[in-house]
Length: 342
Image 1 (cartoon, rainbow, N blue to C red):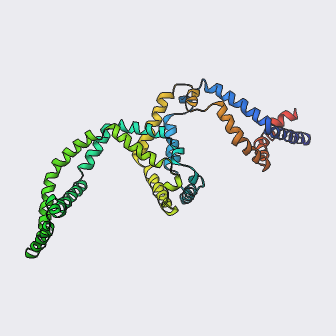
Image 2 (cartoon, rainbow, N blue to C red):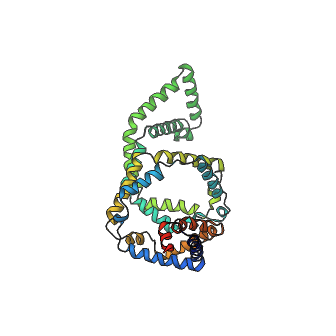
Image 3 (cartoon, rainbow, N blue to C red):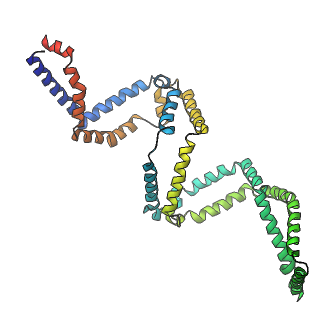
């Protein structure tokens, strides 16, 4: 390449960079992006999801980014700090629970929960058949019977001195036969344990009939109305930053463990496979429309985020440097040398 050709190539490079920088600014850039978005949407109306990607590719992204990516410990500290900021936000003192979840919305959730009658019956059955619950009932019945025998029955209440005599007899019997109280308690509770399954079974049947949807609905809604006007700050009173950070830590550790389980992978795979089964052979625009992504939505984000970022990159000199890195090899190429020499 002659000296004149080199100078011309350098001049053309400068003119090209200047042209591109001018086109990547203000209204020109927005007009360009808007036009390209329309063009992309026209292609999305014919190109299918299967043509640009596959279920295996998406699962690969999930496994690389969601499952295998190492998270710096700093993210946990940041999450704790952000959670604390939310907990201490001034809005908590001004916002009530009802402002977040309306009474109608709460009622709708309750209606859906009440429709799960089978789950409710199973839940009641599992609680009542639990050994801890049976032990609790045995203790309650035992102390109720003993209290009734010595203090609350009609005879001790209405016949003067009977209650004192019974208590004196109990005390005297314990002195005469040490451990009598303990033996009585043991045997009485053992009898209760043998008798409780039948009693609890009948109680469970009673609860299933007594806890009607109407009664549950009224009880839950009454409880909701007692808290819906309370502020978030009052509801979280006593829950400090230390406790919050502990929960954040537990949640973070759970996520790190859960994301590596076969169950998580299977759930992701089920969702991705269904997505491709449903949209794989359909135009991309169908999927975009169904998730609410329109040209207007894209342009709103371009105006709000993309264009300001491009302007910062321009001010920092990145755009010009990037253009030169991209265009300079072309103007130094053999093809350009040959063209200019001719």
